[in-house]
Image (tube, rainbow, N blue to C red):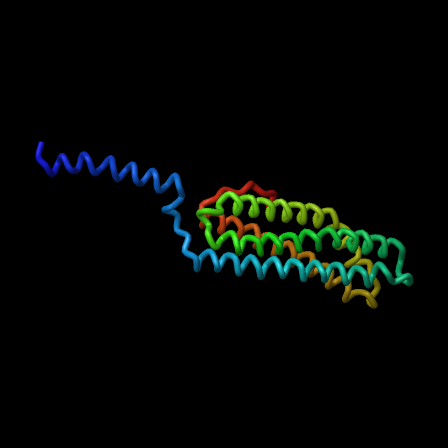
Length: 193
């Protein structure tokens, strides 16, 4: 056997072992700080948007629920949505807090992989709960949309629009979280999204 062939037999297993080490530790996963920062900025903007549209649901349903001149059934539906919006608002704010926490954790993603994964899973749990609550109010949202008098149509329209906008934001957040997790090289729980 020549020295060249001998070197190949030694180098090839060494390269394979090094490759396995890199893959098992996640060192080889592309995770440029700029890419991670881009995901975090997007998640931050989306989480703030979720808070804002949830506040719109809260405020507009209050206008309908608190008007004693309206039909009781309309007011009861608006009140149910309004009360649910309190939980939605808390969940949206929790998502914002987790995104803020992620900004610190992602400054050193390799060291903080476990905490990042845990935080991403918690955000996904909040978003699943948000979606569940929202789905429970879907009939009421559409019920008031078609039942309110013209004097309150703008509040019902704004509630309906914000409700559907929130659905889109939740979907975008879930997608962004999955992308961030893949970029960092962490697993996240499956979602209902």
